[in-house]
Length: 88
Image 1: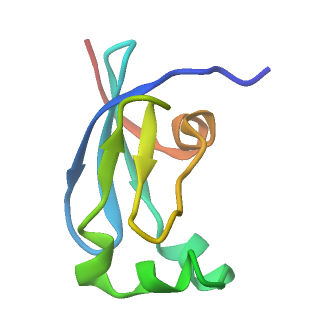
Image 2 (image 1 turned 90 degrees about the horizontal axis):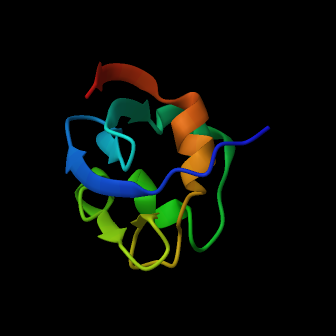
Image 3 (image 1 turned 135 degrees about the vertical axis):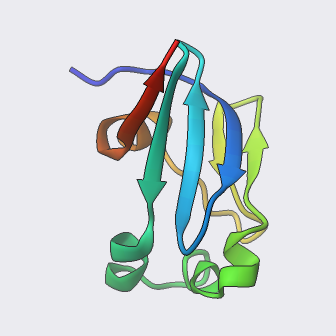
């Protein structure tokens, strides 16, 4: 069963890694490097440019992260795949 947990904070770390804080207080690090190697297309390809990747933003309305290209991620996928570093 998927857990629906909104993201409340995003911070760029390095490479293709983001630190994400979820509404339940859990903080996880998600590395997008492998996914970006696997996928392409008009909304994904711009993210391969690290300077573009850094421009990630939080969309509070839908509780997840997104980029100008229109790419966004399901917060439950990020919650499942992220490496937990902190729990409040």
